[in-house]
Length: 289
Image 1: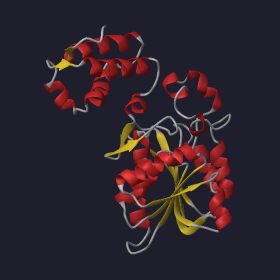
Image 2 (image 1 turned 180 degrees about the horizontal axis):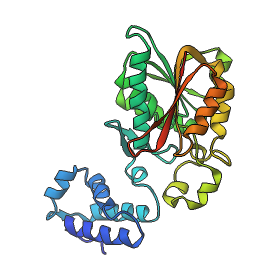
Image 3 (image 1 turned 30 degrees about the vertical axis):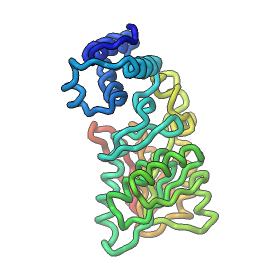
């Protein structure tokens, strides 16, 4: 298809057919053209008979071909929605997912039931990536004192940009898991993490949209996917206050194994495996009493 002027609906029809050939979602073209034209979905559909400039089609064609080759839409448009807010993303961070919204939702409810309203609650988000968990926690519950950490400086750059854009007062620390806090003698009331949890062997079966673009350091975690949880169990007792709350996102099918690790580290804890909206075990919480 040449880059001469054409109508919006023709460009969408071309994209739909092109993406189908590559096994991608045919509707992805709508999102990409919304991004190129800086339009909402309703504005786009109100403009179906409008002519598309050559420059706009060239940019659209490039984006469609990038997605056909495997680049996630969110990296092409540079953002993703999380908990009703727009977060900047690039290939240095995982794309925030709906399952993680549920981790935030359940944690907020547990904090309200566990801690008095006048208590200053200190929260840490470990492996923050885009900052989605930490920033959302702070914006949803402003009394929280939120710290976020990541081992990767490029990830923290994205998280800081998101915090600035969304006006969230979050402290960012670079470091390996909980080591910075152990060294500083710092403790927290609430610890949250969506760590890497995919078994190495699953890499071969995963879509290249994920494996070729999202950062492997945030995805894979040893033979059974539990390496990071095991490391957490060694370090958590040094940083958790009593009473306290630990909340992990886990891979589907890992809930009971992670729960057992927590029970081993905190014999008095009330440990629960909780399920997401699709009925999969996606969260494990430990209430320290």
